[in-house]
Length: 175
Image 1 (cartoon, rainbow, N blue to C red):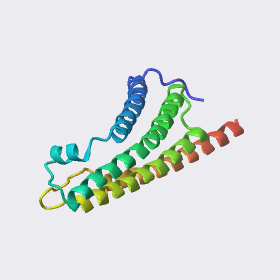
Image 2 (cartoon, rainbow, N blue to C red; image 1 turned 60 degrees about the horizontal axis):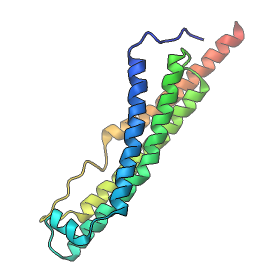
Image 3 (spheres, helix red, strand yellow; image 1 turned 60 degrees about the vertical axis):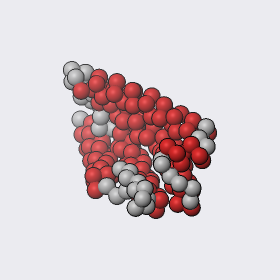
Image 4 (spheres, rainbow, N blue to C red; image 1 turned 180 degrees about the horizontal axis):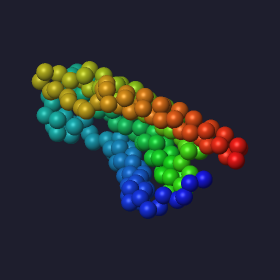
C-alpha cells in the first residue's frame, strides 16, 4: 500500500466540491419536482413564453414537462456518479487507489454516463420536435462528442484501474 496522499491540495478540494455537488444535485431535484407538482397553469406558461393558443403551444408545454421529467430521472443518476467519485477520492486520500472496488466504481460511472448521454439525446429530440420558426427552442442537449468521449475514457480508465489492481495484487503475492 502506498503512503497517504494527504499532502495534495486537490484532494480536500475535490472532496468538498463533491459534497457540495451532491447537495446541489438533490436541491435541483427538489426544484424540478416542485415545478412539476406545482405546475403553473396553461395560461401562465403561454403568457410567459409568449405563446398564442394553438396545438403548437400545447406541444411546447407538453415537451417542457417531458424534459422536466427526464431531468428528474437524471438526479439519481448524477448522485450515483458523485457518490462513486467521492468513494474514489477517499481511497486516493488513504493512499490506495488501485483497488478492484475503484475499477468497479469507474465501470459503474461509465454506464451511468452512457445513460446520461442517451437521456441528453432524448431531450435534444424533444426540443427539436417542439421548436417552431415562430418559437425556436434552443437547449444544450443532444449528441455531444465530448460526452461520448467521456464515456469511452471512463470505460478505459476502469479497465486501467482493474489492471493496476491485478498487478498490485500479483506484486504483493510475490513479496
